[in-house]
Each structure stands twice: as structure tokens, then as C-alpha cells.
Image 1 (tube, rainbow, N blue to C red):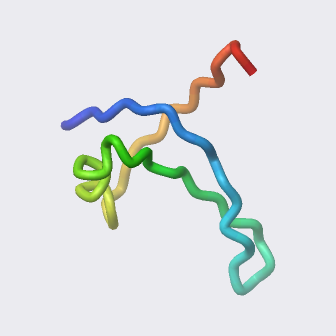
Image 2 (cartoon, rainbow, N blue to C red):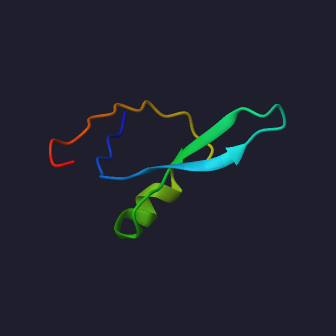
Length: 53
């Protein structure tokens, strides 16, 4: 198992054909090469909200 850690933002991707909201996580440009390996793969997402917000 490989672990990649980065800070990101959850953004809205509009709605699906049933009207349900869709969301996505942006991958920062500085880890783009590692992020390309994630495309189409199942991943485990752990969300930690920072205290600085």
C-alpha cells in the first residue's frame, strides 16, 4: 500500500443526472506526477480539518 499526503480543497462538480450534488478533491500541482497514478483507482480518504480555518 502506498500513502500520499497532501493538503487540498473539496470542490463542487455540479450535479449528476439525478440531480445529486457531486464533489471532488483537487490535487496540487506540486504532486501532479504522484496524482496521475491515482486516476481511476479506488482510494481511501481520511479527512482532517485543520484548526487554522
